Structure formats: C-alpha cells, structure tokens
Length: 611
Image (cartoon, rainbow, N blue to C red):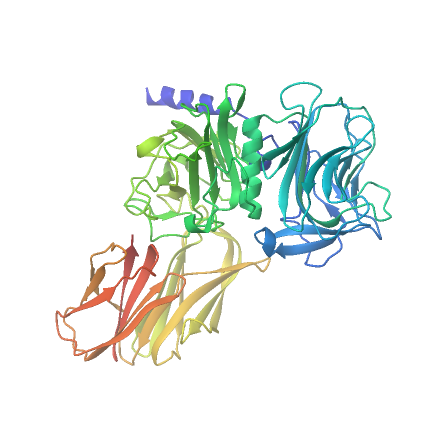
C-alpha cells in the first residue's frame, strides 16, 4: 500500500515538469517559454569600472548582448541606491546589441530597472523591431513602437532608480499600457506596426549621443501580454531586489528591514481573478511552489530569502532529531490588495532544486516552518515525506497552509536528519578546542568534502584579530566521515579563541564557529554552566548557576554566534550555588548566543536561545 501511494505522489509532481524560472517566477529560462530575452548586471563577473564586453541572456535563448569598442558601458559592481546590486552605466554613446529581431508585430510585455544621470537628445533605453520601446525626450517617457508617431506619457524622469514596464497588444484590456513602479500611468490606443531590426539596450544602433545617459540594472521582454497577476509578481520581485517602493500592489513586505531584509530570489504565485492568475513559480532560487488548493481572487503568496549559505551549517537552531539545517532562511508574504494578512491560499506543493549539493537520501530531508514566528526552528516539528523527482529535485506534497504551516510572515528552511547520507553538503560536523595541561587540543570532523584543499587553524586573543596556528591538508573530495586532530603547543595564557578556516582549490573559503579557551598550565577541558530559563524571552533575566566552584571573580560575557558582544561584567564573591542574573535587554535580538564565564583558572560556556 505504501509503495502505491509513493508512485501516485511522484506522478503528481512529474506532471509539472517545467518550472517557472523567469523573473519573479514568471516564464521559464530554458528557451521554451515566451520569455524572449532577460539581461541583468547582477552575477556578471566583471570588476567595478570594467568596460562591458557582453551580458548573458538569462532567458535560455542564447541572445547575449555585446558591446563594441568605443560604445561599451561601464560595469558598476555595487550601487547602494539599488540595494547594492550591480548595474550598467551608459554615457549616451554606449549601447549593447544582439542580432535577435523577433516579430515586431507580436504582442509583448517588457520592463526595465533604470535611472538617468542627465538629459540626452533621445535617451533610448530599449530599441527593438525598428522602434524605441522605451526612451526619454525632454524628461518624458514615451514609446514610438506603435504606428509611425510617438506616444508620450507625461511622467518626469529622475535620477532615482525605478521600475518601468509596458504591454502591447492588438486587442484586449491590456492593449497598450505603461506602468511606473506598478502604477498604470498611461494607456494608449494604436495598432502595432510590423518592423524588423536588431535589439539594442541603452541605445538605438546609431550612437552619436542618442543613447541613455544613466544606468540599467535589469531588463526583460516577453512575446505576449503578461496577465495582471504576473505583472504584480514581477514588480514585487524587482522592488525587493533593487529596494524600490511600489506605488500600488506592494504585496511582498519581507524585504523591509523590520522584517529582516529577505530580498533575494523573490518569487510568487497569485490570482487577480479566474483569467489573471499564476499558480506555479520558482524564479531564480531553489524553491518552487505550485498546486495551491485554495488560491482565490485577490490572493498572493510570495517568498524570498536572507542570502544565507545554502548549506546545512546550522547545527544549533534545530529541533530534536534534526542534525543540521540550511543557514539560509526564507520568509513568506501571504497578502492581498488591502494588505490583509488573513489570506490563505491553502496547501501547496513545494519543490527544492538541490543541484550541486552532493548525494541526497529523500527520507533524510525535513522541511522546517517557524509556525510560532519567533525566529527559531528548534521548537518546531519537522515535516518529513520528501520524494525524489529526478534531476536533483526533491518535493514535499501538500505542505499545510494556515495556522499549521506556511502563512504570512513565517519563515521556513530545509534540514537533514543524517549528515552522512544527506550532508546538504555539510562538510564540518564539529570543531572543538580544549585546554589540556601544557597545550590546546584541536579536533574537527567532516561528513563530506568537495574540492577541499586545506584547513587553517586560526587563533585570537580578542576574537577580532586572528593569526595562523597551523595548516592541515584536506581530503579533496570525500563522502565519508573524516576526523582531524592538531595541537597548539604554544597557546596564549589566559582566554583565547580558535576557529577553523576551510579553503577550496579555487581559493574560496569559509569559517567554522568560534571556540573560546581558557589556558592555564595543568587545566583540563572547558566546563559548563547551568542557565535558566533557556530559551529566554526578550526583557527577561537569565540566571547563571555554578556548581562546585572555588573562584572569587568571574567575567561573564554574552556574544552572538558572529562574536558580537552584548553583555560583559565582572562578578565578585562567587560561592557555590550563587546565582548571577544577566538582563536580556531589548537590544538583544532573537537568536543563538554563547555565554562564557571566565575565571583565573577556568572557562565555563553554555548556549542560550533568545526568543
């Protein structure tokens, strides 16, 4: 019976083969959909200030745009004005071109993230099919793609980055519309004229100062008119990614700083009405949501992540039975046009693209949802039942919505119950440093290694400035548990800190957790202290209790897992069983912390969770 059920579940998933991987999860980027071209500066490999030779076409159609000598725009690696995303800077004579012509008599939708620095004679932004799809004249945006004349929308341009999009059709409600930050500012009424020519970004193929004097971060074109739900989803993806405020239909608010800046790989599903809906979406990330069971009119579900590492490196904030979870966390907005948070799109299917994360045993996977919205997963019930869909895709069917599961403002992530079979790809299981008579013993264990060149033991007296202690060769590639051991024969007297740096063959590296050590000749390994309540709430007092202590003074320090200090005080006249109170002020955010209590002869440490 169980076998039959598994076959049915797998079939349900496989029927939805083609994920929506275009902007915001609209359209596919494998060349099979109506997404004709899609360019963005982000993730290109240029350095800041480089002249751009070409920009990759993300639509999957291979229509990269190319710059020629004397007309190449400048690559800007990060721009604070657009959420530290990259952009392309054009000087009025620059342009990027592809020989793709398309059919200029077709229906279409297109959009761009851009700004302008100063007014040029024409300021062409997109030119396609022999007409300027979008350009500036005397500070106004207009399009002269239709008919033989220009059609002006009286919207004043500025140096502020913004999102502009248009739809063209020979018939229908969305026939000729122009949107600025999702606000429909103009509607035209003309037939589309059939012309053929190449496509230019930032110019029109003529040079001579006719191009844009400003920046472009991202631009796309579909060979159809996007429905209203699709337009809203793409606009929210652009707004979150580039920190742009939408005038209307700003449904995704997890990109706000107060909600944690979940700005990355935003995608969504939604429905305006029966003819304007989008119920299958993945976007640029690894999470795909489809098959909502209760998606009604004026309901949207959108998600994005915090750009944490997509590897199971978090071994602290995990529930019972779970060994490790992704450091990356996603957050959900489930809202409508009134910004009501009572929307419930029902149960959903959720798929995870785990390409490049080593071998995966589906039964080891767990979906974690922060149902009490306290920012922690350790107190949650893991969701099992993942199935393999082939191609490194793994799915959870009918993930609950509403109070039991995915809901507005909640977080979710992926975890594993077995770091050997399903490492995701956890390379480091543990790292320990312990004082032992005249030395400090250093031990670490890896569950798997991918292109691992070497480890470096680093030591610090203040957890800020680090020095190398030793270097140990890695195993290169391994799917087996490996134990490593090293010794610091010349440790710092008193309190010091150790961490492990792992470096790949390509030079990329990452660090382990920081481990404090109190070294006095003849001491043994670190001791524990008793903490209660644990977890603790913001505004409460955490009590420390020591057993069998013989110290007179204790330095108590509260640090987060990144080493930032939130409390430090010397307590005197310590006796056996004495309680020490640590105030958890409002400036201590929810999360995982380490309390260390250091005396002349010992160091005591314990983990604290703040909810």
